[in-house]
Amino acid sequence: MTTKDAQRRSSGDTVQTVADAGASSAAAPQRIKALAGAVRPGARVRPEHARRHNRALVLQALYRADGLSRADLAREVGLTRVTISDLVSDFIEEDLVIELGLRPDARPGKPATLLDINREGFAIVGLDLSNYSVFRGVVTDLDGSIVERAEVAVRDMTGEEAVGAVFTLLDDLVSRASAPIVGIGIGSPGIVDLDGTVVSAPNLGWTDVPLQQLVAERYELPTQVANDANMAAQGERSFGGASTDMMLVRIGRGVGSGVVVGGHLVYGSSFAAGEIGHVVVGTDGGDECACGKAGCLETWLASPRLEAAAKADETAREATLREAGERLGISLAPVVAALNLGEVVLAGPHNLLAGPLLEGTSETLRSRTMAELHGDLTLRMTALGRDIVVLGAVVMVLTGQLGVS
Ligand SMILES: [Zn+2]
Image (cartoon, rainbow, N blue to C red; front, side, top):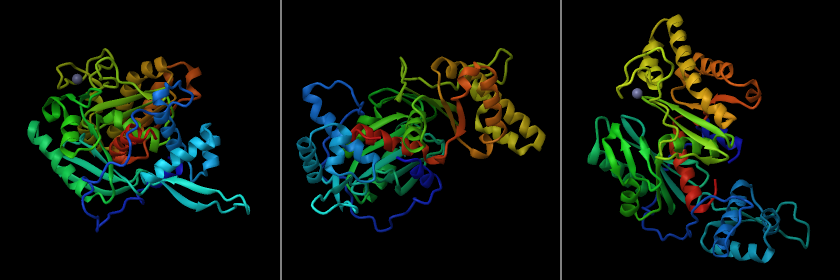
């Protein structure tokens, strides 16, 4: 995804509603052969995996380009023309690749047909379960352009009832998709293991809920469930132009983060990497936290506290937001230094975060780390707005099913 695409997306003008969406495609045959795992160019490949690997390389090259010929592809991915032609024939049969026509500047006798991924020919469903009052969902095309939106109210819903709300939302979105669905991605709050089981999400009353399995079985579609902040980090990487070593901090009712090192998400020993909300910041006390400790990062940054500050007079407002930013900077400095991160991106209410809070974080982060790190360090707001989690869920599906991102 190009930066231009990200800007287009963030401005919201790609959002459209397809009023006459066709019949459900849930039962459409799965024409796409799954390609688990992302592609690492240059990685050693065992023979039995070579074809799968080559498929992903070709799709990735097409996904990032504006149209390539078979010869371009052979050059770009380092495979023979024969191999490329074979793979492309399969893709065309699967409807996953389309021919765009001849290259405009083609010379006589040297026609080159341009190819592209069938970006509008397939759909992906993405959900964000992290908001306390609504579950949000979208249907996108393979470019991540949103073609359908839906939400369901979930205030005070927990346990089975909350799982039921996920199904209600998915029933709606799956029935509205007008193209075959490649897969479903879901960003859930709490701790989520690599099998997509929600190990613990206190706000939803979920403990060991095998959400990925439940959804995959009900809809017979490839499904990926992951922590919401991790999804957001994926979204920022693919659609927000973030660097390969970055941290995405989500601030809302709670505080969580997704950490990407060397282009890969970090999960940690118990799948809780990035859970910085209940780390005590400083040794000078602070407000009591719901977890029983005092002065957790969440007590400084949770949106109710910030919203209350926003209503105060200008001086008090600025002081509270700056102090919240400083506490965030204190907690991020050792992480940024230890991992040599190049970018920290904040996601959450723009009116509260972009201003004294962001400045306070930036100044504190710089004053507490080595100057040698600062040249490459960027601290900024996301441009993806509130769609960051659903777009990250879409990226998870693209990567998991097609090997592209
Ligand atoms: Zn706490």
